[in-house]
Every structure is written in C-alpha cells, then in structure tokens.
Length: 144
Image (tube, rainbow, N blue to C red; front, side, top):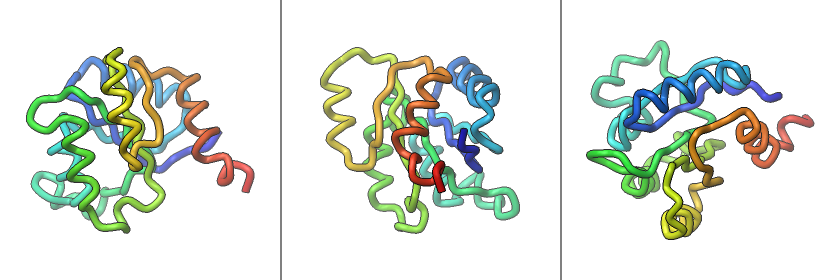
C-alpha cells in the first residue's frame, strides 16, 4: 500500500482524532499525521501562519486531508471556501476527503458539489476505507 508523507486530520473531536490516528498508523499509510481542531486551524497550518509559522523545519504539505463537516469556529464547508483561495502550490496533488457522522443527504450533496472534495465517507475511518481511497485516487502512482 502507498505510504504518504503526511495526512492532515481536521476535526474538533479529540476522540475521533485519537481513533483515526491509530487506524492510520496501524494501516501504515503515512509517515506523519497532523491534527487541526477546526477549519481555521487547518488553513493556518496550510499557510504556515499563526502557531505554525515557525514550523519551517518540520512543515510538510499534506497528501490527504480528512475533513470533518461540523466544527466550531470554521466548519468543513467554510474551510473549503478558504481553501479555494490558497496558492496552487499548496493544493497540488492534495486530495480532501470529507468525513462525518452526518447521515443528511444534503451534506453529502453539498460536499460533492465542491471540486476540491475527492470523496465523502462516514465516521469512523477504517482500514477498508483507507484502502479504497488509495486505490481510487492514487492508482496511477501505485503502479508506477
């Protein structure tokens, strides 16, 4: 299975982040995992601003962002709006997977209306979902 340099978890739930970190580490699909507590925190990370401004030696652009929908301050959809305005070099090759407990079809439809969203999955993240995402979105790089 493909091993990524960094996966970014964007979720305000410490429990979900803890669980998803364990699943990703068990699946052995990434060297680094960074957790952001909401969309604003994630945008600051991607732009290397705020508390992330001194991360020059350890900063990595993520390969995948797992993005929750319902978060305080800046939710997943508000993050996507801010993400659109980021420089292309930050977004190049990056995929966003919305991950939520929401069973609301409107949330799924809205997520799919964003070109930036590669997939929508229901929490909790599991190894089978990770495998499916990698096969769907990275098939060419796996065979190369």
